Image 1 (cartoon, rainbow, N blue to C red):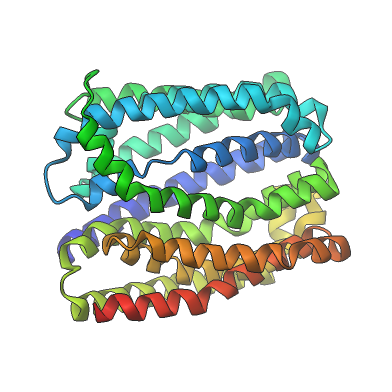
Image 2: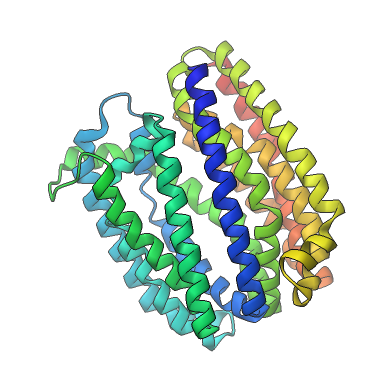
Length: 404
């Protein structure tokens, strides 16, 4: 297992470095072509998409990784559920586009919201067998798979932005990436799904996935509640500043934790009946993450201004104070994130729900006065407070898991 873990870390780590570099280059180029307001319009559309994706989450992928049996028998049912979910999300986006644009006081976002409805519709047709990349640990295949998707997404977005100077270019990049993912999922992963449905399998997936859906919904408001408040209270230009600052400061840090978490999850599943070993492996993983993310967080905090000037340009200097707070937030979040993989491996999805609910209470209990007083810096502070509030809950749940 140790050899598989190290190999998985190596491949996923390399993949994350490349994809984050591509994503950073994409953001840097787009930031010099598009204005903060344009990014804010895209931010409104992505808020809608992300919300509907999480509240319709079935938990199929987590279920398939948790299952110790061959996942092939679930593929057909999982695919039909995924298609149905994609159609439902797209229809809801179309129906709600005008209302959402009105809520954010941004009529210009309506057409962008309608366009982004294409993304879940296309994604619904992805072959569920891609979960084997995570379950069976062939991370070298996922390395090539995900890297190609990121490159195509970024290239399409940059190309369209140069032609149109419109935030729609970012959405067209997502559409291109989604179409390629559907195609590759059928070409390189087996089995390919068929239009067959098993109600018994669906019932098993939904029964275990209900906590994942609830946890995902709470996680959405925990992660994007600050975006919603910023967009609603301050407008699309501050929203664009805040979201780009978030990407620059948070994603490189949290992606490190994500690499460890994704590799550790199937490994945890294998040793979940040995609490002593589970605790030992978890402790080592958190220690490894700390060695990587803490120095990175310090660099982001200390060198925020030159990084913004070099990567984004002078029109984005207003994000610097918020970026410093977000660097602290990202570091803390990266250190507590690995606990979620333990909870999922132990089939304790409810623990994730409890922790996320605590974070939401911390976030929404502080964000309005902080945003009113400090603008986007206040939103970053509220996000940090929400994350700190989850620590006692996560600690208690970990103690219970390790004693099981």
